Length: 150
Image 1: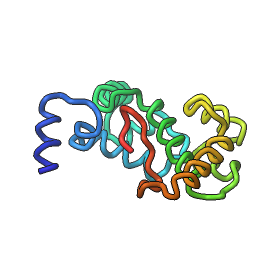
Image 2: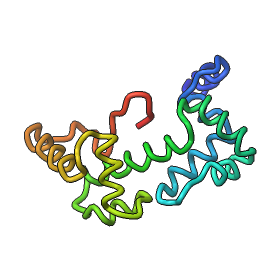
Image 3: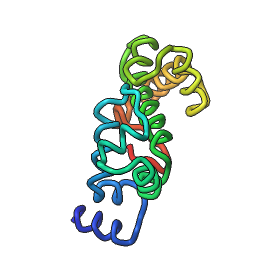
């Protein structure tokens, strides 16, 4: 049923995950990003993963996913970082390195721009919410982000 829905949505030209999953070239690039968020991705490197020219890849990725490739890379890195902040006691420097930032300062700046709070405050807020609710509602590692798959 899911496969039929994805094919139907892709045939309509829908953007987002259904279209991305149905597109082998874009799917290859997404898998690469997800498998190695720390890699210093460029549009050219992702285009090679998709076996497309740089310009064609960039246009197609943006049309299918709904945002440019490097914007998506940044979102993915910060999504992975948010999960690590919520679900581990790992220090900021290793988290920054794990998701591809050269310094904790660069990571903290990008994180605050995306989430509106510093990584440390994000971690504390999440822990405070977990304590007051007594549970994470079965969504450990789940990130709610409108317009993006979680």
